[in-house]
Amino acid sequence: MPQLPSDTPALFKGRHFDRLLIIQSVWWYITYKLSYRDVCELMAERGVSVVHTTVMRWVQHYLPVFEKRWKKYAKPVSSSWRVDETYIRVKGRWTYLYLYESYTKNWIEDQSDLSTISVATKPLCWGEAC
Image 1 (cartoon, rainbow, N blue to C red):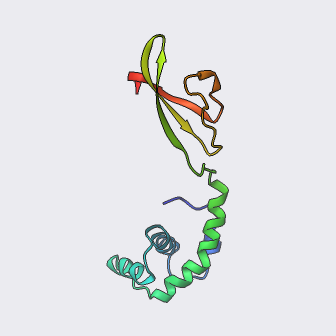
Image 2: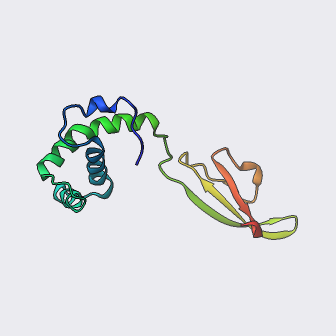
Image 3: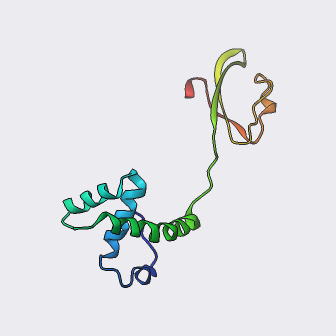
């Protein structure tokens, strides 16, 4: 579980339960898509008695705060990518060429001409090197 910054005790000031229990409950709820009652059962197995409405209030209160903090550290990712396989002749020998396509959708038009490889489409590996 990721560590929260040092200003988090002020966020949990006045709460009956320890901040680590609250973070753990919210984390279980959003990560494993559990119901509030399932989270209460997990907490009960660990010796903590919590009512499902309390977990619901924690999720409603802390989830927006956790999302804001997460977005500061999250890196953007590509929406999709694909791999294409082709069989080409290199120096008189037939070999496989594996290419990937990133989110910009740039495929090689003529796959036998390697000069058409754009920035978004790069070879992954050649022949037996795969």
